[in-house]
Image (cartoon, rainbow, N blue to C red; front, side, top):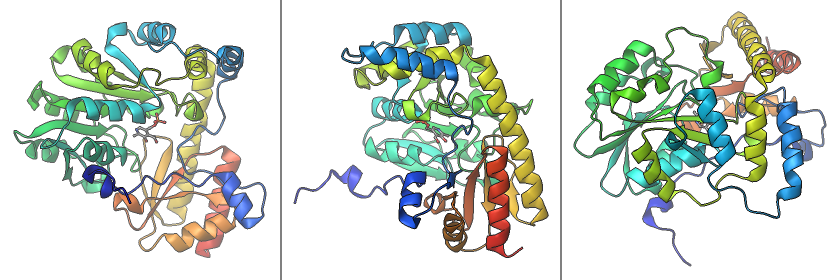
Length: 362
Ligand SMILES: Cc1ncc(COP(=O)(O)O)c(C=O)c1O
């Protein structure tokens, strides 16, 4: 039997959240809820749905491989040059393209031990090695990351806020780090949850474009814009860096439906505001209720929280499934006693808390 290449052989496959339909099929139930994949519980923007529907009649044609209209719209809305933007089939694709463009055998990429799981996967797929930095208090330790940089280091990945921990790196730490790092090391700053963050000390990595570093800011339409199923993410970085990434991406890596939906979503400030409000209230609610249950809960800046059960979380996970509530085990991150819970609609958050209390016998 044919063997995969050695970079693939040792990889542990990414395990997505369990789909609602699968659970309902397995248990013969209806009305299950999924708060497992950090999705937007209010749905996509109605404007985005309408635009995607209108674009449907044109899907006999290939999409615009350069996403011209979306690129210009985003460039205006963010105040960056169009040539600094690259789109992908979700931000995962952008992260993968960055790794394939800049990493190769013999190179190292530094990342946090609980950082988003796609970073070690794309690093290893590119033939490079992942160098792991501990995350005390579940947070990226930029001093430690810096101390692990060697002449072999080609990239650093920082998720801000991080998934699955919800923690963030503050402006002063980020600025210290960027002040130290060489301009020829790729610094991926993954801001998938950017729009949710309220903390005034949160750094917007686009502010560092003038520093002459190789920063790739990565964002997505999957989270606050509610378009996870459309698959559209983007990266922003220095033009010559991004133009090399264009060589490595697939020619039509974003669909015409996704492009149309994203253009419309950018115009729907009301949908973004509502999504953020519901998320902030949900985070507060979960924080208070989990606090009452005496469960350790890492303060989150994103649209999910990390719960530490202090022991094997799988019996609780499975019991929650039987209550029709899907959350996410995160053992693959080395977080062996934790579950990640995404913020849902208020009624979903309440249902989770009711089910959680029942399962814990509280
Ligand atoms: C930190 C982080 N980055 C990137 C992604 C990828 O999102 P997408 O590929 O849907 O844009 C996720 C998804 O959960 C994430 O949590």
